Length: 144
Image (cartoon, rainbow, N blue to C red; front, top):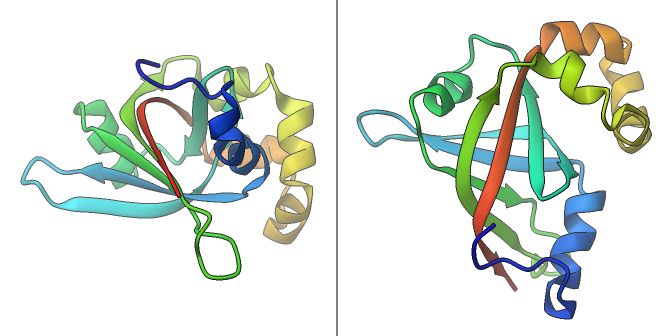
């Protein structure tokens, strides 16, 4: 992560939000320059945000084509003043979601336990449907 030191005290908000927030906006750009933004579940692990997706989605096609990516956390705080925006690159991990997930399954399941229950299918089935693993590596961080 060039230029980003999330271990520094000034980035405490970013660390907290990356660990706790359930939804981020994942934005890619198509070949014609049109942006595509979608809300996603994500998991922050070892300097990367992991997003699992159905393989046929627009975001997967854009990432596979080399699109730059913005990961924007939902603005929190009383007046929308907790903002974390990460810009960087993403790649499709050939291992797939099920294998990637084994590295942090317990923490992922804990973070999303209520959402998984609400979705109405067990994590194994979610992993089968959302089988594409996208690894997002940030290069730039904006917070306020």
